[in-house]
Length: 572
Ligand SMILES: [Zn+2]
Ligand SMILES: [Zn+2]
Ligand SMILES: [Zn+2]
Image (cartoon, rainbow, N blue to C red; front, side, top):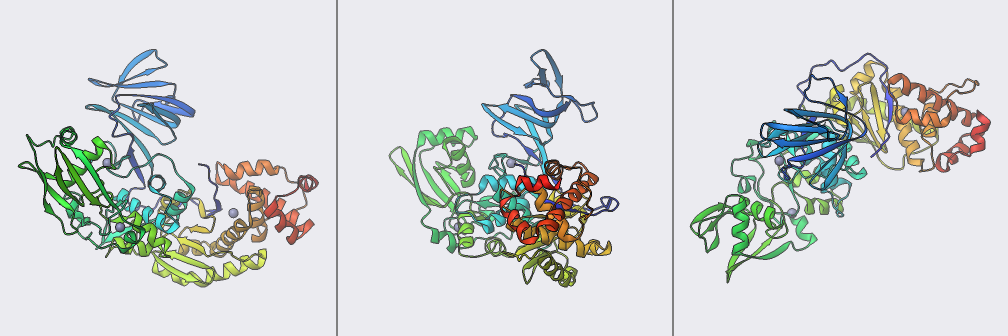
């Protein structure tokens, strides 16, 4: 999905050399891990390259077929030559297909051979990954605050060190976090609004989990994964959830024959020999089954749920919170909730948001004792509310800049004659790498604005470079302009008016070499800082001409409705 954000420049030497003990800012995601594909095809979808080793010279990608064979993998280009390799590296824009499914991607891809299947791993920024998870997992009941809570949980999970995979960090199935390789505007907004924040417990970044519906009480982590998934979870206790209970009953029942169960368990190697009876042997503190007794064999209830889900579908045994009784040669399960029950209950979170709770309150309900910390340091994110805006920062010293922000906002209001329609969020990052990792903006950008959300390089850095007041005013102007803009408003006018009101636009009477259409192109796809700056100046020139000739009231009307073609022609 194409998006545009408005950026200001840092206009300074590269800041990126600062060494940081950063958490990973990219993540390797295993693609189609449940399919165990032995053959895939890849075709270019625009410029694309491939290599057979990291140090090899890239070649233009043609249509290739990759197959698993005894010694590794082989690949065929345009059906002519067959060659073997230990790895294939794809970059650029490509289409990958297997098992009647295909995806168009632009993430660097690495294909290797594992016993039994090809391993396909895509490398992407963590923030992009979080957006994909939120997009896949969001439902009709969700709203911005529940999606923000989900984004924090998905990010915390992503940053946890290990998920039991080799060749990549996380898989794209529900084993880790399910995703469909598609983003959405709502998921993007929730991800950006929480970028740089993860859950922390007693000084450590916490692994976090979510599930669809806890059935009225969440599960303690050790009920589901006995000492398996690391220490950060020991604090995740069982807790009653009044919110999902208010939404309605989550009870379910299923009748499954012993033959079907035997078959499902056999696939996972769990089938108890000659079993006839099934009962719950042990329950955890929330009431969920932890150990089942099949005949004389003990089975983990979670392994049982996953085996049945994979073989017979996830809508049968929906949770571990059930009673089971024999009914002839079948078993009747009666239970409540959906999913493992640990961490965030999505149904409850959506209801909390509907009742007016914000995402921090939602996280406090499902992760008691956890704090919302900056991803690298764990320093708590604070919200400082002022008239017209909220400053979010993990650096307590940033409160000193509140007067500068207030001044910049009122300056932007008086220059444009516009007032904010809603609360503006200003999110200040504590380092340039943190800003870059969180926003995916290049390091030469000082700040950027997307709708009513402003992201800033460190405030002390902007202040030291004497860029603070100008940058803040510029970004506030962007929010004011964006609130008025419609689908009819061209990009050059949105950027140009901000330039003009910032006082950065040239008022020279000479004609502008770039056409408005060319400016739009350059604004949307600037290759460098210089390119981008030239486009901004040209946009500012046009906007300034309009303001000079027609006045602010008329130009504001055009901001909403678009500029008539004859007006533009007269300017050129
Ligand atoms: Zn701008
Ligand atoms: Zn996984
Ligand atoms: Zn719940």
